[in-house]
Length: 120
Image 1 (cartoon, rainbow, N blue to C red):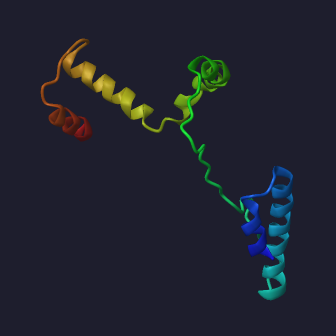
Image 2 (image 1 turned 180 degrees about the vertical axis):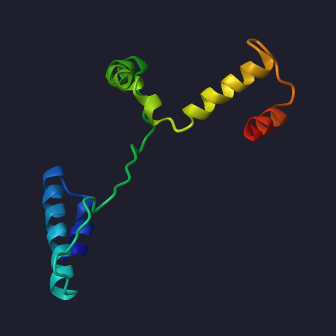
């Protein structure tokens, strides 16, 4: 039963896909409980992953894309630094550079600078 759900999934409509996922989840749970003897079967939230391709070359209108995505992307832009794991090190490195070379300074030996930074 679960294998048939997977086989039919690619060609199914969205409503049929929902039904197939429900049947697949129930089928996998039944296999675990009835055939493998599991007390409480655990089925992952995501059962199938699907790749998609547009087929022929597809182009998007830049203005339409800007109108669609600019607002939502701008809304999350200000919180992105919270997820930047390198931000503290970059800020520290900038301070290290400024202390050594001053604003507008130039470093001719980047490897030595990085080595010295890690040593300090």
